[in-house]
Length: 87
Image 1 (cartoon, rainbow, N blue to C red):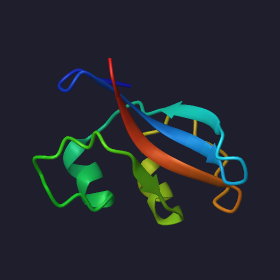
Image 2 (image 1 turned 135 degrees about the vertical axis):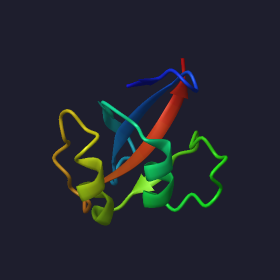
Image 3 (image 1 turned 30 degrees about the vertical axis):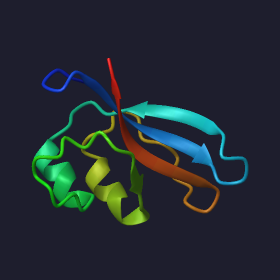
């Protein structure tokens, strides 16, 4: 999704744990900054979350509300991150 307030694309990246290769990108269909800050432990409410935030299994329930097509989560063989990219 395109965050028009900050002019960034918000999405989830999926990487192979074995090769560290980017396997997929999953667009978020919406983004609520204040809720994502709480969920991912961003204490600075002024931070627009442009950094890369690791996703843990405990975050999946929260993220289900924001993903149109959910990844096949595999936290043993893959790692996931919430990311933003300037457009």
